[in-house]
Amino acid sequence: MPSGSEFLPNRLNHIWRLIGTGLSFFVFGLGGLVLGVIVFPLLRLVTRDPNKRRDRARRLIGALFWVFIRLMRGLGVLSFEISGVARLPADGNALIVANHPTLIDVVFLIALFPKADCVVKAALWRNPFTRHVLLAADHIPNDGGVELVDRCAERLQAGGSLILFPEGTRTHRDRKLRFKAGAAAVAVRTGATLLPVLIECEPLTLGKGEPWYAIPPRKPSFHLEILAPLPLSDLIGTDGSERLRKRRLNTALKTYFLERLDGWH
Image (cartoon, rainbow, N blue to C red; front, side):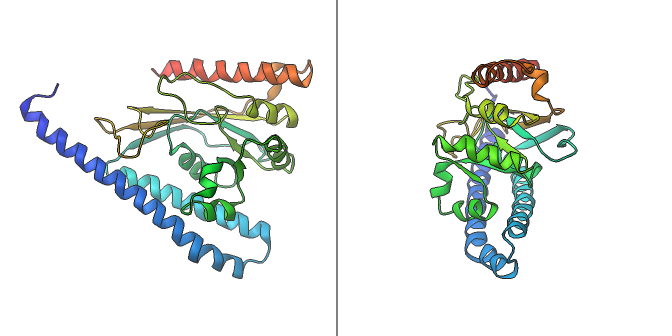
C-alpha cells in the first residue's frame, strides 16, 4: 500500500499509462487502415511480381512494428529488453517457436523476424484494421482446419522460416503452458530446425481475456530471449513413428520452455 505522498504520483502514472495504451492502440489501428487503403494498393501498382511485393510489404511491416514498440516505450506504456542473438540458421530455414503471454508478442516477433511467415489467429483476418496487412504479408490464418499443418509445412519446405506459437493462443493467467500438437506436427513433418524464443512480461498485461484498458499497477517490462537453433534430433532423436515423434517433441518443447522460464522467476 503506497503512502499518502506516493499515492498521487502512482495514480497519475496509472492514468498516463492508460491514456498512452489507448493512444498506442489508436495509432496501431490507424496505421493498419492507412496501409490497407493507401500504401499496399500503391505497392501492388508499382511491384508486379507477387514475391517481391510480399517481401517489400513484410520489410515495411517489420520496420513499422519496431516504430510501434518504441512508441509504446516512449509513452511509458512498457519497457523491453531483448537478449541473445536474433539469428536464423545459415540457410534461413527454421521454425521459430515462442511462448505467448501477451497480445503484442507477435508484434515483437515480426519486428525481429520480418522475413518470416507467421501463423495468425483467424479473428485478426476478419478485423478491418489488420486484414489487409496480413493479406499483403501473405501470412497464414490459424483457422483450426486440418490443412493448417500442410500450409505451414509447405512454407518451410520452400526454404522460408515460420513463426508459430505452440500454445495456439495466449497463456492462461495461471501461466501454465498448454502446448498443442500443431508446432510439433509441423516440425516433425518437415524436419525443420527449431529456433526458440522465450517471452516474459512482468507484471502481465494484455493477457488472455483481458481488455486493453485493464493495465497493471506498474509499468510492464518485457524480456525476450532468442536462443540458439535446436536441431530436431537433439530433442527427440531420429527413431520412432511420426505420431510418436510428435508426442515426444510436444513434451520436450514444453519441458524446454518451462525449465528456462522458471529460471527467470
